[in-house]
Length: 491
Figure (cartoon, rainbow, N blue to C red):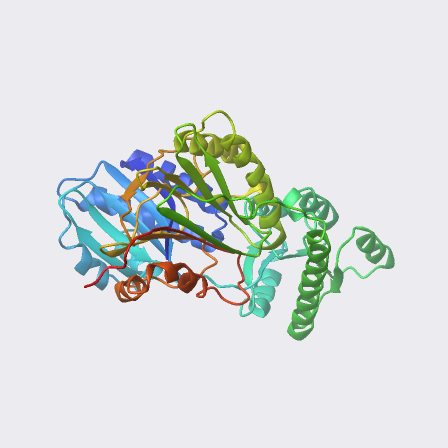
């Protein structure tokens, strides 16, 4: 399963490196990649591009940066149009960080230390390096604010083994960080210069995305009026200095777990009130000799399937997957379902018009609207199918060969404009096309798996793929199959 999430071309020059880093930071934030991964992406791209400018015999003037998910892993790829750098692979494999501080010459060593697993390819038209990114940690993110550097160091030593930490000595700097990052809990000193703990608490609550963020004060001030004011501020707990590691871990764990339970209870009650019509029950048959098969789980979720017959009797099928999990995905999926429905039934909307309008809407929408993966399938009466893929897993074509259909546009809403490009497929007797959301499975297709899939009777392939779905998937799951009637092939 491969999903192209981001792809962009840039002019390569020393002057443009800052702009490239900013674009990467902005789009990584929108894709919720996390601060550590974002910083690593910026570092590796910046250092690699600098090395291209410094060491290629004919330096590149254009690069393309892409970010994709394939199986359990995420990948960063950089293509350039410069001359081949034959020594790169050997130099990168042997690069090591120096044992003492130096002023320059560490670029390749930094790249290898950050993303050590890579592949470098030279083709007649471009060079391409592809990094397999290390797995991201799933630890909870805690923000700690204290104007005492020794206190920050002590708290970090207590919490670092169990949590992802963001440490700040200035409340103003912490607010800047919160505006761009996810956080699971704030631990803050009460008496700080410029912005005290109470004012900081109010400023944090002013962020729409952090209104319910768990908040704990840690202070040496144990006066009754201070404790009373802290309680009235709506915080989750008040800890006194000095504090032991076991007590701190116990309190923070309890606060995070309580918020998780409250959120789960609230979500369960709200789900009961949601009545969405974003399942596939209203999808009609497609022109013979093609057949359409669809399965979805759950019926009301972040995934949706839609259909529209155009004036020339061709049909558009839309398979969408709202990024995210749980309640947010369901609510945002319903919003996008309604918006796309309006676009589909407005005059005679083409795939290009649909993608262009939806991309513009998502780009300018509030960040809470989130991002969406989308497949539009244009079906003609001559059994040709044109596939437009924006961030969904690669479809699988089983015909004379078994293959994934690669290529796509990346996620909608990342940039103000998008190049809408489709892939045309001619279906013959016993061919089948399979589309699915990322909840199906987290593995990566290998050629042997595709060949085994192809060997199955055409009419049974959809059921085989759907049975690959976990019994209780963590994500919404949809499978859509288009098959062409005909006699089974004999070899």
